[in-house]
Image (cartoon, rainbow, N blue to C red; front, side, top):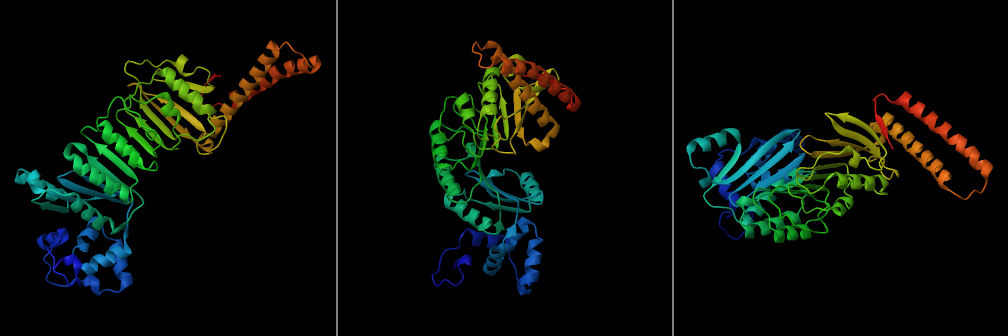
Length: 410
């Protein structure tokens, strides 16, 4: 009768966890922990490491029920697998615990096996490769022991059969999943389309596998986190459509300085909060041109390693946490654009507001000079005299508040 079906009147073959229990746990005495009162028992289990809780859950059905009812609180739960192994990484208080299930023929020599045992306290070997149902059972058994705010599924595409991948993806999306990662191998256009059709846009999506150079999908830039190793298919409109208020990381693109300038101008004038950080690799052989980057932008500029760094702000504040943008180019043609609250750089924000006001005053004066229609020439002449004085006053105030030595560009 199945170990996990104690109380059942129907005999059955041992399940996967019966096998684990029979091989690794041959206890002759009852566990003292079960004899303790509820409160001390909970305190003891709360102090355990995650893999210790898992090993304890295999001792008996009663112990498993107790542990699932109390649930150990952890920070993150990562499950990574292929058709030949399952690796669970559990993070608690900055420490990682690993639980490893592997098809034992993957290890060809005894030294490798010993090394694995020395480094992993919860490792199990099987003489059969895993079926999707096994994966689902193992995952459910382990995750039921923990209370977790962040669950991540990692797929090794070069070690997964395609039919298994479809089933695993359905399993991941059917439950609680905060982040999907695809490593190694190649992901086809058809599979990528299916993935983005099924995956909720509230999920964080990471794809480091080889991707098609030509690809489009309406959800591609809607995910909570966007991390693509191949994004030469991405357009400027894709960048402008981002509203995840979080992270976009593109390892390879066809964007140049003109595209980045257009994006920054759009960000400045956008009425909605767009993102927290944009990191991307510019088109191959692109030369960082500060004249093109700064065209029609109001910025506080400085140079670091001969590269232009600058700070800008949105014109209309809709999210107080995403107001000031900091642009940093790297020597390898990567750029980083991070967005912060005004409180992070209070002096810088004040300088940007004054610089923006100067720009508005100069435009007002220019319109007056170009206008042929005069409604009240006395009032207009008065205003012409006031504007230079206001501009001069603002410039003096900026010089007093500028502790950074910025170059003012407007």
